[in-house]
Amino acid sequence: MTIAVLSRHVESLEVYFQCRVEQGTAYPRSPLYYELEGYIRENYTKICRHWQKGCFGMTGDLDTVVLAVGSLEASDKAQRNELMEEREARLKQLHARNEHEEEEKNIVSLARLEEVLEIARLHRLTDDLDVCSIYFMTTTSKLFGRIAARIVQDRLKETHLTLTPFIDGVTVSGYSTFAREESNRLVKCTEQGRAVEYQQLPGIDLFSSSSSGEFCVFGGRKETSSDAVSNGRFSWKCDEIAFENLHRWWGDIVVRDYVGQKLVLSWNLHPGTADALEYYRSNAPNNHRGMSTKGTVTLGTVRVESSPPTGRHQNWPLYPCCSSAFHGESLSQRRRATTSSVILDVERSKSIPIDDVTTSYSGTILVHKVRLDFVWLVRASAQFALQRIRSNYRHIEESRPLLPHEIEYLGHVEAIAAL
Image 1 (cartoon, rainbow, N blue to C red):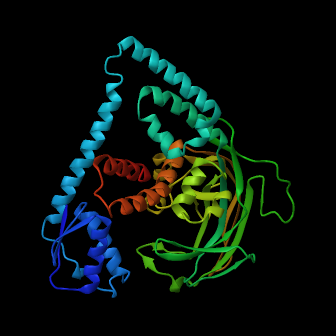
Image 2 (cartoon, one colour):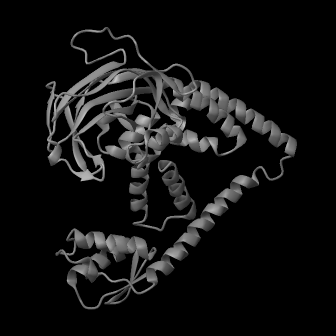
Image 3 (cartoon, rainbow, N blue to C red):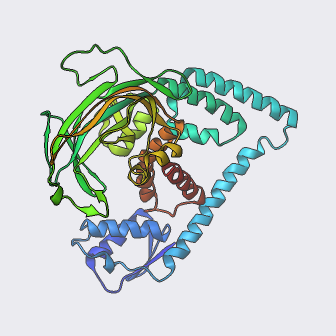
């Protein structure tokens, strides 16, 4: 029960409360005193919403609707306790059915449950679960963990990745002048506080070669003169004209305006899958037409230096785009820090000073495969699921406080998204 007290007669407010009285959800005790059904949070949300929309004949500041000190906290506590008691009662009813079963019957039931889950996995379960749910399934119990491990293998086999080369990255606001091939696919982004412009090449398709998380380059493309990327091979060439006295120096380190290349790994979500549905629910909840299209989620980035060392089957580490280690550690430190990586050949790499102010950069890289741990897909899935969960929780908090298990679930998803 919520008590609403008017400080003065306001016709529009009285009309609102009279409507509640006619609905049977409010009881007038005096012209300025009403008792409203429900807890404070829900009633406060309704009054504020009507007030903001001008349903009282005017729009006003929310400060006009004042809660008594400590009333919301006390109401939330009572409402939370009531909801928890209802939840515990439902759980007791569920457990009461199996209360008197013998241990042998339980063992048989578990065996049958595993058989049922295995049948479901072979038919629909793999497609009906998003990656985040599969991860939670692995942590539930040994039985569910065994089934989830098989689903993980199935999901990795079906996963389609794209590795997109971004070449000849240059600082937009730097002092240098660059000579490079003209392109209509220039992409700007911010790195370490600097605006950087890259030339984006066509993506390299990667498909799973096994259930162990290895993705190989799709070799069905034919090499033509117009292809910037052919069968995983791409090249770059750029000349930087920089006056040495215009560069900024810190000790013996000079900051060049040519930043080199990077490879961006993306996860392609196929239409109709649980992951694609979750993605569009989070990013375009009202765009039902978009659910039939293909979604792309960025997983991580590989930084290639302006003149990397040549060599075959080099193991270049993959890092999340938001990782501080992406820029702050040396190459040897980065290679020790992650097991997910891109395997490539640096076939040619040159950094040649042409004269006192000009440096020429060129090279060719052949991508072989990507090694990707399932946790990368889990983290990406949790990150876009968080948007939907937080939005849903905001709506829930308009009528009641969050329950402990809801807060715990949010904490688990946030922890996964930060892996």
